[in-house]
Amino acid sequence: MLGKINSWMAGMNVLIVDDVHGCLPEGLSEVGCNVLYLPDANRGEIIANIPGKQILVIRTKTNVDAELINAGQDLKIIARAGAGLDNIDLAFAGTRNIVCINAGEANADAVGEHALGMLLMLKNNLARAYFQVKEKLWLREANRGIEIAGKTIAIIGYGNTGKAFAEKLSGLGMQVLAYDKYLKGFGSKKVKESNWDEIYEMADILSFHVPLTDETKHYLDRTKIALFKKDFTLLNLSRGKVVQTSALIEALKSGKINSCALDVLENEDLKNLNPTELEAFNYLSQNEKVILTPHIGGWTQESYQKISNVLLGKLLTFS
Image (tube, rainbow, N blue to C red):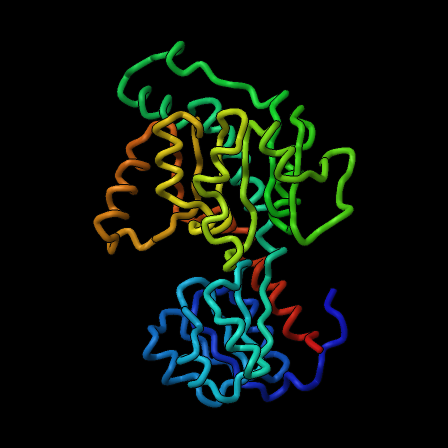
């Protein structure tokens, strides 16, 4: 249920520049907003249409930098239909008193399920075995799996997606550690509030669920990897730049990281990789110990509508 809808929304000019569920533009129109829906708009079209708009709705493709913000002199709210705000210049938006909101809670279950699926694929060699059987190779011993029961997993970032992943893991017989620099007192019977020293000592599996900020860029680098006492499995369903790709590849080659699942990459524009990025991508994509998916962890049929519903609720009850 929505809270009290603010009357100031009537007459607001809204620009939506990415694909969203119809409930968002329809809901805004119903309360009197003037909605311009341009899901395929390029940057030039966005800049041309943003003057006079009070609300801008984006997803991942739009980089909201100073140039774009300056073009929208009347902007009051930038709404991200998704979780991260890393494609918005938050500092510059703040100087203009523009409020930035997201819908991070809407796709948490989708990310949690995707993370669990990737973990099970890695530990049971599901992707490799599937392609082998298609080639009429029936290799049982070569694909003997590893059970996750009894293993220790460390979740870095205990916000919406970290919590959802921990919930999916409950009942699987794992010890779940969680670390979040900005949260305290969240431990429970299912999850132990932890710290990096304990994680370095105990973790068999490491899973990242943090936003991309200056603080978390290359959060997992050579220095951190070297501190782990055991070889470990890596999951990254946050942002590609959270993991230093060159350090990851070195650790895969040495065996310190025994396998990894990545839903994100440092550069996801695969048609425009520089030579170094292309070499790294080729290594990862051809490595049987690596699973790659195209940033779809939070993108399900259900989350598509949930994201727009949550964003609509926040906009209509904004104060």
